[in-house]
Length: 624
Image (tube, rainbow, N blue to C red; front, side, top):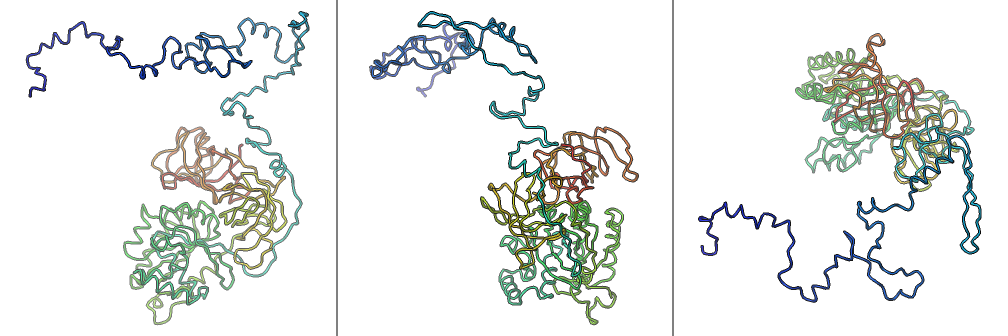
């Protein structure tokens, strides 16, 4: 222990109270060991440098040049100076107070004034010449920008707030396409033939939606037998034999591995009176945004519930997706619905279980969701009972059920009414191809009609394009006229940037029919079972047709009575659950929305936060 210092007998008072060490770290001491010549070369001279940088050394090679400036101890670059040095040294670009007072004496706002012209001396001749002052144009106070935050850099031009509420910069070509009305031929949808209907399949996860519709397509012979036999063989090898019919719609490898639908599956089939566009929506709560995309395109809905004991209660009670799907459908204006009670074979085709489910569902659908006529169909998607044909006489279901099959119910759903004479509104829900000059999209015509040769505008980016081809998704004809209600494939030509056109954009014509993008809207909202009340500044995700963006509540105008529609309270401080209110919302960037009275699809909105739907409503007015 000899190498350790013995501190047991130290006098700590003497050690701490020593005056010699009181300011040890605040003093400078000379080096006790002399520096070697090699080390001394790297030591800067403190008498020839500014507080941060060394002085400029002489460069002998440039002594003979005319622009050479001899080094001086006081010469430093402006950026090398410390803040104290900059404050002490005058800036040559900033005029002195006396010069400012002279300039202000000869300058008045709103008037042109001419100060006495100073004279400058000619260095060669020594004569004086008058200085010519530039003509100063009249300056108006209104031209001074009031909001400094509008310009993020000194060279950026502030946004133009004119143009009927358009608050973002537009190029000449975009502005011309937006304001110019291009001629087009007015068409009328031919009468006769089968009606089109867009049917979305919704319900809680594992309710059997994909299996049921996949088996229905097989019974209608829309799936080749060799394909379904292949699916049965491959699914059996993976231990998922019951998923064979679901693979008809779940085509991606990830969906088949996970056993759940993740995106909208689209297919087509025909009944006796209908051409059905089938939209199979995901049931898992993580994929609600994809379900909203399908619900926004639908004319009618088929709700699938699981009749298995315990499974129905899980999906219908709080936390399940059955209630949320129904409320989302209602908020998007889907008023035609049928309910398929699936997996009835797991309860032995028990009529009491079927009646129990009907009683619970009717109370919710009619009293809370506002649906009027809802039909219930007992069936089994796995064994195919009551899908396309009514049950046989020897089936247990036939003993107490003599109603229609699923296909008969779908065939009897009323079609939605669309206006082909209204201004063109085409909603893009998928982009299949995008190059610098070519764009191909899947879209739905909500109003008007579109055909090859039409000059249109894509909003909200205001991209002028021309239609090269337009055809129905389930048709082999390349050039057709697509009317309101049709799901179509559209090929466009123009100038496109990568990822500039996405789902949620809208195709419109220019001129008076044009849809003007905006950021602020007056909306009538109905809150759901929210835990935190709405206040000014509340942020959420806004869903409208295929669009999703961030939105904030900027003003709360009034509370509305849900039954009478009259104002209960003006300018409320907060809005609680199950309340109706008139609000002003603002998006981060311009979006393509318009009042509900102009276009119902573009006027319906839904708010979500943290994976839950918190409110739904309609656009009353576009503010700016």
